[in-house]
Length: 77
Image (tube, rainbow, N blue to C red; front, side, top):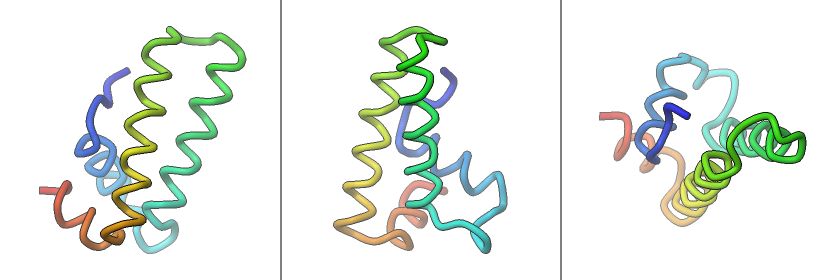
């Protein structure tokens, strides 16, 4: 798994240049669904998927408490 930090996820999202069509929180929720599906199917190393899910949960909590704009500004630098 190449994405290991909150900043990596935000930079990945910004790099996809889809801010006008999907919100950061929607993107994170979708990423969680993908990782949970992979976890259920055993398609990758469990510890990497669990680590990714924890990072996404942290990111969602930060979005909820500070807002998407603040999170984007903080981590996309």
